[in-house]
Amino acid sequence: MEMTLNVDPSNPADLRQAVSLLQQVLAQLPRLPAESVSDGAPVEVRMLNNLWPRIGRKTRALVLTVRDRVPEGTTVDIETLAGHLGRSFSSVKATLNASLRKAILSAQGAVPGAPELFVWQKNNEGRWEIGMTATMRAAMADRTEDGGFTMIPTAE
Image (cartoon, rainbow, N blue to C red; front, side, top):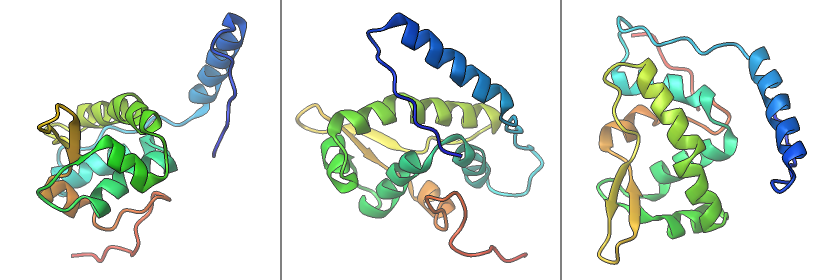
């Protein structure tokens, strides 16, 4: 399901109506189950299994772009990441700091011991850069934007 909502942030009535509508939609969605500690999958996979339904296609594209475009062991500044995505710097920064961060914290809360998805560091100019650990990169090797996998995992 995809929904677009246009709201005039300077109009309090518009904001109240949007919040009310979103609360109604959220109330109809199924609750995401907490991941089982006894699940035999690695904690990184369980965290991603919990995170993926919490984020939309554009946010998944952002995560996958970090996986695919930022070489292992390196980081890239948000402006460069925005260029890879064809989005504005402010849009990518807002996604990283708001909806994606909230979804990551929720997934980590549901999966005890879940690691961070990204590695953050400041460069010499004081700008934040983002990368991904090797374990998280490996855990999401078969993830796609549509939420599925590129192949059906085999039973072991």
